[in-house]
Image (cartoon, rainbow, N blue to C red; front, side):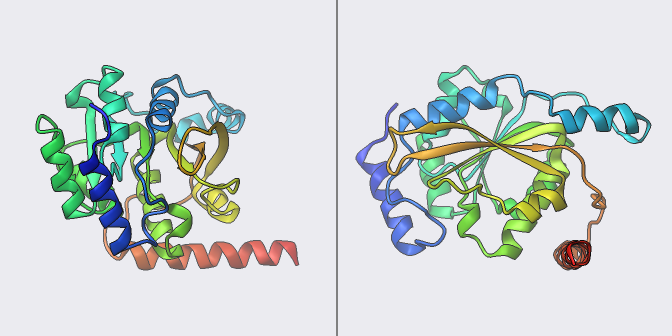
Length: 246
């Protein structure tokens, strides 16, 4: 199954309705989708910081059994979804979330054998909990993190940190050289970012990043007023960093 005229039409209409949330006017290429899946399904390397953390704080770490579930955020017209299926990812292991109802409906018609969740990535932890899924190891994100308001991006990162296993990662692509997550947010959430591939055969060319969870000091069990808690915690962190540099 390849990208059809209907895919391009739906994607372009979505871009017209909200160009801030859609960084490109055309869907991801087959080359980009294949590269994302290649890295997502490959073994995730252990980061030195994580190894040091495990050696020094193993008694404080909760280990979760590895799951084969792959979460896809913002599938658009399904280029990455199709690449996952082509890679023989079991249907039962795909957890696909699309915020836009029109695009979600388009995806459901295109992949009638899959369950497409029409939901916001800011509700990821709750959505997985409803399906009795506690932790995952791999997430593919096509969300335009850099273009998002800071508050929304931080909430999505918080959700990802909550559901990822220690050492787990999400794979994100961008259209520029800049990391999709500001350095202070990487530090705050206990993440590390590594550029792993440049895909030239895409409009525009894209760079794939592996964002790996190392360790976090956040209270991941906060269920109410998460947004307010998160922003207060981040402001306190920024103030502490400023004081250290002064």
